[in-house]
Image 1 (spheres, rainbow, N blue to C red):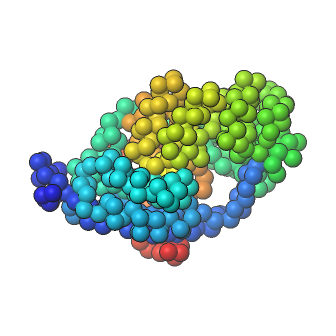
Image 2: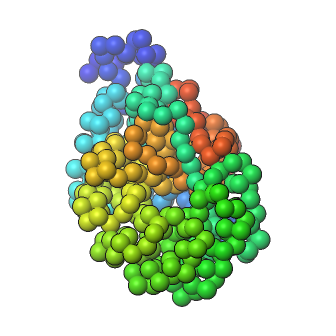
Image 3: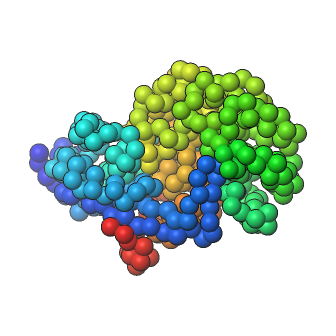
Length: 378
């Protein structure tokens, strides 16, 4: 390999090796207790990866346990170091077999995703290109939906959040249902009614049960709220229950969606082959990063299915702009708050329900060292 310096004009005909890959973990308390149908939490951990080479640094991250740091440091970093920073897919396909005996799903996949997104950002910065241009942009804007509506919210907290999205022109919003593993359907119904009265008749209303219902429960409950125009029913049952998802899909008038817990291409292929969803959710911080996102969305396109980006909006926006079969991206309250705190360039609100990808090099973000340091846990 012949090393050569940036900028882009100097890269023709040569390679830039990845010099090092570093990871850190930061735990940020939530602004108020958060919960959904099957889980409650009071903090969120972001694992940040920085890949350097050719005088540039790229950043990527995942939301997961601090144990991801050791996977990056001990397993993935040594595989990537010295490889060409321009051959991101080559690095990806070198990292995957290195995880074989560690268990690819879960923590290993989160770490892989963080490294892969950092390498794509590094490549784009070396070439002095916006990430979405490097990937092949197909749209100038990315539709978003407001997401939060936690079961732990009071009615007033829910109204305040919904109004904040409505006031900036976000035309689609999502709340959590399936509270206490589907045992409080009366409150679920009341919250759907409140949400509809707050956002008005013209906005799209989505619900997310996080697998809290059985298929029979989900079908019966949806018919109770159908009059309120619920058009998106996310994980009405466990995403592992493909037959249950298909059963709900066949019985309700809303789009049934799932996929956020997919860690590899085969998981998504099984879900699509089962006819389990109307729209496939993909999370670039879990699925294997941008490299695997591109493969997953192509398989979805072959099934004539749209995809929706799950959470981490500022990490998704570049690749979302390069995805032809994208429906929208989740503007998730908790991650928006953390990304604005941690990164310069993450301050913008959606305008009329869309985000615009950054036109600067890479993902356009810079870490705020003073802001992140108080939250460091590893």
